[in-house]
Image (cartoon, rainbow, N blue to C red; front, side):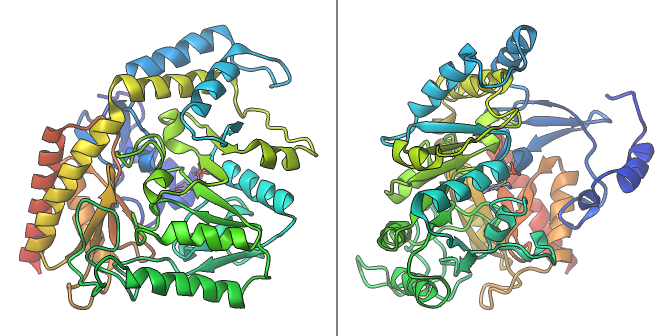
Length: 457
Ligand code: PMP
């Protein structure tokens, strides 16, 4: 139990001195005042325990205050916090070698940053300098950052401002097989399938043809004949764990490269084993990006990010000087290094696959039971539960109703996230150390909250 400032005082300060975003509908009516964390658990100032299934938006990868990561940070804090990377301090070499060993050839050159937005800004710059082209394409519904440049990649009105932004950024239709006009049962790569019938012919995905057709239309109408880049997350995060038809990225990459562009995988949420079957989300699409950006789970909550690319792209970029005061500082490198060790030692990626698949299978049973659960999807511990007014219309469940369930789940001791363009999707992306017992606990809580919600209607 926390004995410092009262909750009332914190609430006042929150209203007066904190970024007003913290008071918006994306948050709880009364926030959980979190004081302490350990692995998948959080405790509030009154000592109430929560199962954390949101992990600070997929950021706490191996567990809150994981003892070995904390120890690595403390050890480094005692030795050296900072110099510039003009000097050759050991941790940056130990770390970049280790991180590079997790990426396929020729993705071996690493630029360390402090956040995902910074990583994506850098990737935009690199793509433009390397290709000599300017235009970049991303999916509608995506979130790639909140900096003035990445705001153009981001395609969700909640994060847009009425200022000139996004010069040279075009958003194309997201190939969403649940909410989009085409798709259904077997189009995407997930242990559970949507109940929507896709009508695809055997062995051929017609939905994919349609969405690729939309991308071609974007090429024909909205960008010059040569482009700089195509950015895509392997599974859309803030967009609500949206998954694409199985071959979409493969075909899209080919079309982008034919137009001179580079392909960029934003692994900020999907990386570091979260999708279970692979270390990187792009691997399950059977593609090889030219640039990979990462953040969040890379540091288990420590602020860091990275851009990884090929020597060839790095050479085009290297004509100027790229400097970042804190990027790759010794403490970040020590933390990042221990996160990679822990993922291996704790079998975190395997656990993600095991518990994530079980969670999705159980959630799919609830989907079949309740009219307002439209879709359950994802891979590993990157899960979306899309809520609808009813299955026939697939209209998004309105924010008030979403909030009722969201608050109720919190009151029963579980923290989940919300996302999707209409705020209609619950997002489950916990620290990857959760157990089968935790999964069963959440299923019981979620079942009860939906059941009670339906009773109240
Ligand atoms: N890319 C993706 C996919 C993200 O989800 C986010 C953050 N939600 C970012 C980039 C931006 O990362 P940051 O907040 O660290 O700038």
